[in-house]
Image (cartoon, rainbow, N blue to C red; front, top):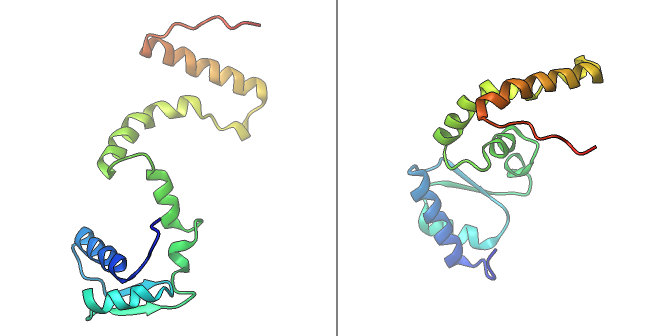
Length: 132
């Protein structure tokens, strides 16, 4: 956060946003902060500006699909980096995520033991004895 959200800060925000997206939006939706309206008139006077209490709710709700995708991408610098990781991970993860709701505890333990038996030779890890 910044200590002051004045017209100059809002102008910088809009310019940075336009530069990043490389497109002129059809509509800009903001909250009711007055500095946004003043800055928008300078930066993008041809674009419609909507400043209303309920219009921004779709972006703000964390349970919406956009938010879910962002949480899934968290930690990856790009879509390509996520894809590279997931392509390798997709062959490994089923061994360690059995459908737990479809099996008993004994079956789950046996499934996990099998998964680690497959995984250990691949990684070169020898199983450490557990202290009982």
